[in-house]
Length: 344
Image (cartoon, rainbow, N blue to C red):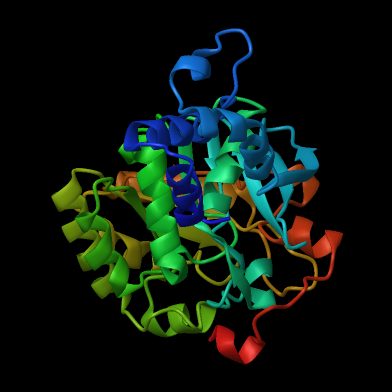
């Protein structure tokens, strides 16, 4: 099911826009469509819609089902989520009522340090499946922030992601600045995001201040120089009033030297921005390594002293080897629906 099909189904049963809005609101907020105690649906929905609510509840719940849950010591929990076609994705319950969702099964960007990127693209995740991840998480605990930082590159599934963001922002009781669109920097993002009724916060994957190294680490990302990426981010930040979150995965011996510290200061000092520095979550079989935590703290402290607002964050689920894509990779071999050649 996609959201268009849900809307068509409701309208065919006689639902008006206010009825459709109620269904979207209850679903996106993780509340039951049928409340036996209050029975508000009895005198609100048209009869044919009321009759369909039990089956609709089952159909929506089937969009994303919990296959396994992996709690970590930091309060996060990685969720392996099953989709109706047998594919699976990952969501992450984050500390402080956050949720990280996936927008694709696999990913075409091919980041060299990412397990998901090694698979290539399998298929897109629909807007309904994105909202279903939020509804599933809200059945477990409150969700006040949703970040699109799970499996996939949201810019490569832009229509579906923006539709989900609109529903979550208008019906899901999530503040617009608490909807965070994370991207490697596709130019279409800077054109599209300001146009919608919900303007999410923006997180840009930077990872290095060097153009050549960025093209090596993110081989199929748009060929933007770090300076171009930051310039586009600054324009979006000033237009929306939200600071840009720049993502920097700290790789031992790769992007943690004095030259990179100088590069970060050159790029971000004075900008309406926050640098999220995350030490790499080591993945068996890949050559990259996680730097020493004391070294990471020293880098963050130096950047602060030199005028760049920096938050040193630990990747959720360190104690369960939960880097994005690892749960799925351990659980099953993906059923490939899109040839690898088409993913580029």
